[in-house]
Image (cartoon, rainbow, N blue to C red; front, side, top):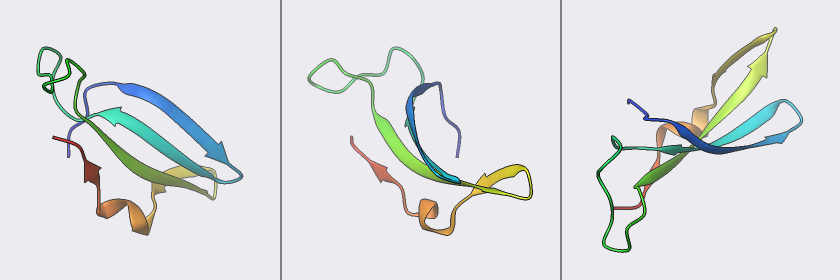
Length: 61
């Protein structure tokens, strides 16, 4: 998946929930906001990787 910028990140211990823009700038929903998706990252051995639960993304079209 490709993301086009990060709206915000929430850190909880060794996990991070990333709220990212899922489409390029200029693509908006009917309310004028950009589509977004959440995914999770986990810190293991000093490196961030995708958390297992993050592969099912919630995308708001």
